[in-house]
Structure formats: C-alpha cells, structure tokens
Length: 116
View 1 (cartoon, rainbow, N blue to C red):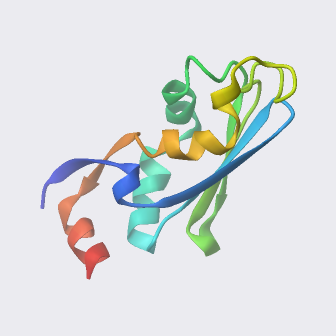
View 2: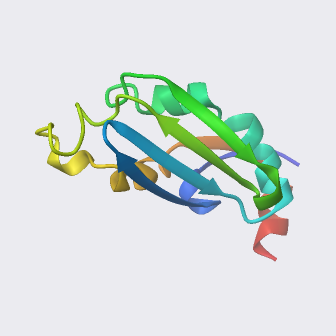
C-alpha cells in the first residue's frame, strides 16, 4: 500500500454549469472507496484554492453520499455573470474540466480495485 498522486480526471466524472455569477460543479465517484477519498481530499477550501484567481466569493460543498457525489457552489465566479463579463471562455461549463486537473492523494490499492 502506497499513496499516489492522481488528477481527478483519472478517478471521477464531473459536470458544471452557471447561473448569474455563480458556478455549480458536481463530482461523481465510481465507488464508495473513491468517494471516501474525495471527502477527505476535495474540500471546499481546496476547490477555492484551485480556482483562486477565478472565484472571488465563497465556495460551499454539499455531499450526497447515496450517490457517491458532491456539489460545489462557487459564488462570484464569472466576473459579474455571463452577460456582464468579458471572460468569454470562463463560463460555468468550463469549471468541471478545470477541476479535473486537481491532484489528490489516493491509496494505490483503491486504484487497483476501482479498475476491476
């Protein structure tokens, strides 16, 4: 057993969208074991830090254990909103893809069981 660093894109699926100046990012784990790691590693503080130059407001995490999912609501994330900003490439749908670059530490035995 050893801890390895992996980008989220190798472990989970995600979707995102926006409303006004708020971005919503949903992250879905493939198993209870991976979800337990996400609960430890993918906190609201880490997501806020990951988007430090893009999200000026609060980041809240909502957990959905029955779905092995979590939802992040990021306030003040779009420079005033889709129709008020010049940041054309930073609409909400881009945030899930961006979050997939976040690296977390995960036990290599969980990676093996997740692939089988």
